Each structure stands twice: as structure tokens, then as C-alpha cells.
Length: 162
Image 1 (cartoon, rainbow, N blue to C red):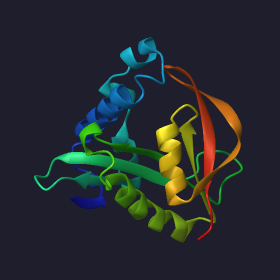
Image 2: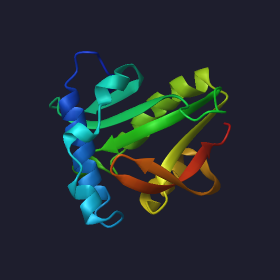
Image 3: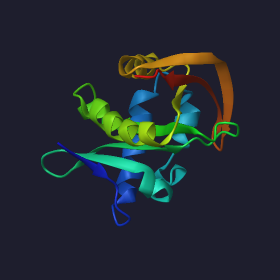
Image 4: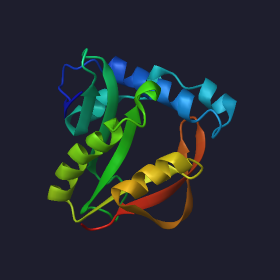
């Protein structure tokens, strides 16, 4: 496996396809079918954050994971970093890819920001457990986030200082 920062000329359509594949596999029991059915590769625009994205490839050069992270998007958190997303192909999950991608992203974030957080779907216990393993803890209560496809319930998890 190889992990590296994304390049401007990477295949971001493949990254968007990865996002779609992960959403359809991971959230099938967590989100309404109608919500998932309206998602397409055009839902995401990973090319807009290429400078803040890490990608993982298997030994054959196939994209198997992506993690985007950078300055916090929420007002009032200007000195914070945020993990925007992490997606691992369903066939590659639970094999260490996510931990390695997060390690790469967190090295950069912790060198640039005082705190780091991630927002995760409240009902996604597997993701919440993953973040806990890395050192994140939940802060606050469930919040509603409006996205073009509807509304999601998320929790914020903050990385504990090392």
C-alpha cells in the first residue's frame, strides 16, 4: 500500500466514485434509502480540496482510500483543524488503511493547529469506535447538519492531546 498527498492531476472522478461506493455500503442501514439513492459522483467535489487530501493505493495502484483534512470550517474554530472526510473502499476496511491515512493527516494537522476535530454521523458506531481508537472523544451532543440531500445528525469528536 502507498499513501501520499493528492496531486492536482489525480483522478478525482475515481475519488468521488470511492465516496459513493463507501456511502452506499456503509450507510445502507444508517440513512434512508431515498437519501442514498439520490447520491451520485457529482454529489462530491474532491478536486476542490486536492491540496488537503491524502490518497491510498493498493500494490496494483488502485485507489483504496482517501482522507481530506485542513482548517476547521466552523466559525469560532479558526485555530482548529478538521478531518473533513475519510473513506476506505469497503473491501479494504479493517486492514489498517484508515489508521495510516489518519496518521498522515493528523501529522499535518497537529503541526498546524491547536486542536483537531471530526464530525461523524451520530448513528455510525463503527466510525465513532474508529475515531476513539485514534484518540478522539465525543464533545457535546448530537447536532443537525443540513446538506443538499437533506439533514444529517452528527456528533463532534475532538482529538485528545498526545
